[in-house]
Length: 151
Image (cartoon, rainbow, N blue to C red):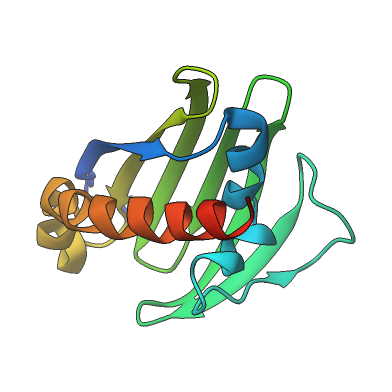
């Protein structure tokens, strides 16, 4: 009888809060897989569907290799989106929600739940909170630059 050793996957969750220069109905589209390229020029997803909607699957390639993305939840009415992303060594769940902050601003909360699928990336997964802290300033600045240009 072959018994596969139990793998206790390392899973880490981290969030960032972004203060955005537009109300949720204006800012929310910048978190979809098409409009993200407005604030991240390196973002080039290959869509495997013809519209942004729950269930859309798309592919990306970056320094970690090919990733398969599922737009698991997409609700413009409640300003919530969830992506499930798998690559050979990591599984991510990305939850994004926006809420109003006065009449002309919003607050976005972006939460990553990252699981190592391979022991070789466990230290990288554990570093998620510091990675998120470094990227929060960039995300907020880049998104606000687009929002300010579109006024």
